[in-house]
Image (cartoon, rainbow, N blue to C red; front, side, top):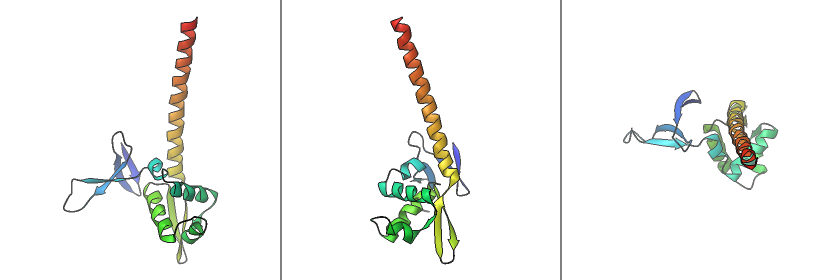
Length: 136
Protein backbone atom coordinates (compact mmCIF):
# COMPACT_ATOMS: atom_id res chain seq x y z
CA UNK A 1 0.00 0.00 0.00
CA UNK A 2 1.71 3.27 -1.07
CA UNK A 3 2.25 5.89 1.60
CA UNK A 4 3.48 9.48 1.18
CA UNK A 5 6.49 10.15 3.39
CA UNK A 6 8.33 13.44 3.13
CA UNK A 7 7.04 13.91 -0.41
CA UNK A 8 8.15 10.46 -1.60
CA UNK A 9 6.12 7.42 -2.51
CA UNK A 10 7.05 4.43 -0.39
CA UNK A 11 5.41 1.10 0.39
CA UNK A 12 4.89 -0.91 3.56
CA UNK A 13 6.56 -4.31 3.77
CA UNK A 14 4.10 -7.20 4.05
CA UNK A 15 3.34 -8.38 7.60
CA UNK A 16 6.03 -6.24 9.28
CA UNK A 17 4.61 -2.80 8.53
CA UNK A 18 8.12 -1.45 8.02
CA UNK A 19 8.38 1.28 5.45
CA UNK A 20 10.36 0.23 2.39
CA UNK A 21 12.77 3.03 1.61
CA UNK A 22 15.59 3.74 -0.80
CA UNK A 23 18.07 1.19 -2.12
CA UNK A 24 21.06 0.28 0.04
CA UNK A 25 23.62 1.56 -2.47
CA UNK A 26 24.34 2.00 -6.16
CA UNK A 27 26.06 -1.39 -6.07
CA UNK A 28 22.92 -3.04 -4.71
CA UNK A 29 20.11 -1.23 -6.52
CA UNK A 30 17.49 -3.93 -5.97
CA UNK A 31 18.10 -4.36 -2.23
CA UNK A 32 15.78 -2.13 -0.26
CA UNK A 33 16.37 -0.74 3.21
CA UNK A 34 13.68 -0.58 5.88
CA UNK A 35 12.69 2.61 7.59
CA UNK A 36 10.79 2.45 10.86
CA UNK A 37 7.05 3.02 10.87
CA UNK A 38 5.56 5.25 13.54
CA UNK A 39 4.90 2.32 15.87
CA UNK A 40 8.39 0.89 15.41
CA UNK A 41 9.94 4.31 16.01
CA UNK A 42 8.03 4.63 19.27
CA UNK A 43 9.25 1.20 20.39
CA UNK A 44 12.40 2.82 21.76
CA UNK A 45 11.95 4.30 25.27
CA UNK A 46 14.07 7.37 24.53
CA UNK A 47 12.11 8.14 21.36
CA UNK A 48 8.86 7.72 23.31
CA UNK A 49 10.15 10.19 25.91
CA UNK A 50 11.06 12.67 23.15
CA UNK A 51 7.64 12.16 21.57
CA UNK A 52 5.94 12.83 24.93
CA UNK A 53 8.00 15.99 25.51
CA UNK A 54 7.11 17.25 22.04
CA UNK A 55 3.44 16.52 22.73
CA UNK A 56 3.61 19.27 25.38
CA UNK A 57 5.16 21.86 23.06
CA UNK A 58 7.75 22.33 20.28
CA UNK A 59 11.37 22.24 21.45
CA UNK A 60 14.95 22.56 20.24
CA UNK A 61 17.44 19.66 20.44
CA UNK A 62 19.33 21.24 23.34
CA UNK A 63 16.18 21.67 25.36
CA UNK A 64 15.19 18.05 24.77
CA UNK A 65 18.69 16.85 25.69
CA UNK A 66 18.60 18.82 28.94
CA UNK A 67 15.52 16.86 30.01
CA UNK A 68 16.82 13.42 29.01
CA UNK A 69 19.73 11.24 30.15
CA UNK A 70 21.26 11.23 26.63
CA UNK A 71 23.57 13.53 24.69
CA UNK A 72 22.53 16.15 22.13
CA UNK A 73 23.88 14.01 19.25
CA UNK A 74 21.85 11.05 20.53
CA UNK A 75 18.70 13.21 20.68
CA UNK A 76 19.40 14.35 17.12
CA UNK A 77 19.64 10.75 15.95
CA UNK A 78 16.37 9.85 17.68
CA UNK A 79 14.70 12.91 16.14
CA UNK A 80 15.93 11.79 12.72
CA UNK A 81 14.21 8.41 13.19
CA UNK A 82 10.99 10.09 14.38
CA UNK A 83 11.12 12.46 11.42
CA UNK A 84 11.67 9.62 8.92
CA UNK A 85 8.72 7.80 10.50
CA UNK A 86 6.57 10.87 9.83
CA UNK A 87 5.94 11.69 13.49
CA UNK A 88 8.04 14.85 13.81
CA UNK A 89 8.65 17.94 11.68
CA UNK A 90 11.20 20.68 12.16
CA UNK A 91 11.64 24.31 11.20
CA UNK A 92 14.54 26.71 11.33
CA UNK A 93 14.36 29.52 13.88
CA UNK A 94 17.55 31.53 13.68
CA UNK A 95 20.43 29.10 13.97
CA UNK A 96 18.34 26.43 15.76
CA UNK A 97 15.90 23.82 14.57
CA UNK A 98 12.63 23.55 16.46
CA UNK A 99 10.95 20.15 16.45
CA UNK A 100 7.26 19.45 16.93
CA UNK A 101 4.89 16.57 16.40
CA UNK A 102 3.54 16.18 12.88
CA UNK A 103 -0.27 16.13 13.18
CA UNK A 104 -0.51 13.98 10.03
CA UNK A 105 1.73 11.27 11.49
CA UNK A 106 0.03 11.34 14.87
CA UNK A 107 -3.35 11.26 13.10
CA UNK A 108 -2.26 8.18 11.15
CA UNK A 109 -1.34 6.42 14.41
CA UNK A 110 -4.69 7.40 15.88
CA UNK A 111 -6.51 6.05 12.81
CA UNK A 112 -4.66 2.74 13.13
CA UNK A 113 -5.57 2.51 16.82
CA UNK A 114 -9.20 3.32 16.06
CA UNK A 115 -9.29 0.60 13.40
CA UNK A 116 -7.63 -1.91 15.74
CA UNK A 117 -10.06 -1.20 18.59
CA UNK A 118 -13.08 -1.25 16.31
CA UNK A 119 -12.10 -4.71 15.07
CA UNK A 120 -11.16 -5.94 18.55
CA UNK A 121 -14.43 -4.78 20.09
CA UNK A 122 -16.45 -6.26 17.23
CA UNK A 123 -14.68 -9.61 17.73
CA UNK A 124 -15.34 -9.43 21.47
CA UNK A 125 -19.01 -8.71 20.84
CA UNK A 126 -19.27 -11.71 18.48
CA UNK A 127 -17.56 -13.97 21.06
CA UNK A 128 -19.90 -12.85 23.85
CA UNK A 129 -22.98 -13.29 21.65
CA UNK A 130 -21.75 -16.74 20.60
CA UNK A 131 -21.29 -17.77 24.27
CA UNK A 132 -24.75 -16.41 25.10
CA UNK A 133 -26.30 -18.47 22.31
CA UNK A 134 -24.53 -21.63 23.54
CA UNK A 135 -25.74 -21.10 27.12
CA UNK A 136 -29.36 -20.50 26.07
